[in-house]
Amino acid sequence: MRMKYGVRDGVLRKPWNEVFYEAARIGFDGVELNIGPDYDRTMFWSEEGRREIRRMAEEAGVALASVRLGVLWRLSLSSEGEEVRREAVEIIKRSTAYCAELGAGFILVPITPARDEGIDPERSLQNWIRGLELCVPEAERNGVVLAVENVGGGVCPSARHQMRIIEAINSPYLRAYYDFGNGLSLGNDPVEEIRFLGDKIAAIHAKAPGGTYLGEGDLDFQAVADAIRGIGYDGYIILETKPTDNPTEAASRNLSYLKKLFGES
Image 1 (cartoon, helix red, strand yellow):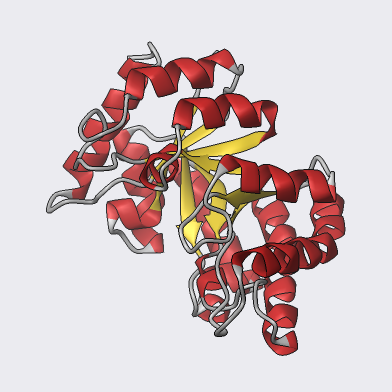
Image 2 (cartoon, helix red, strand yellow):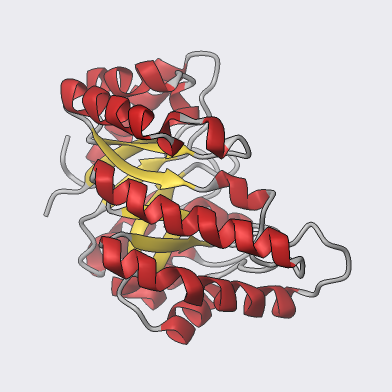
């Protein structure tokens, strides 16, 4: 069982026209691109731009593993605003089609809080479920998994919240993106959460809470690795670590640590 290793574009601090080549040089299998508030001005959002992304990925020999819809921190399905929710749904739907075109198998969907005042976390969670129900049929048509992430903000701070969304929608194209660093930072036991989510995990983020590099800080990395192996996971583990003053050196060091941790060095 060999893991696949990916890296967020922000970890390497390279523009998209360089990030695939840098990831290949370091030894990653894939790249995760962040689609931020300017989503409609990115290469991802135009046919010509997607052709260029595909060309660069193929030339570098590194896959587009996934995209992260960071724009959902501004346009959240938690919102009570109909226009905000409609735009968020459209972004998610179109992203599934674009990811299918580029060969990316999953999309990181951060379960973000609303920017509106006075919406409690339970109401926000139900709004997310209703919104994702509208998106999943398109994900199924395109064969791309929507992977909901445990993040701060109070709406989805644990694996149990992720599972509530997954069970409410009940589709193989709605799964979990588990961030074990977030899990610990949010007051949970990542080992227990990994075992709880089991085969519902579509992708994993790796970071070092309380430290700079993987292996440092407050997390028991060996226990986490044992739990990941224990559920039979062999998908992507994607770095979301600090870039430091030398992003290439930091990413290379963290990749080497992961490979050693999983007995692949």
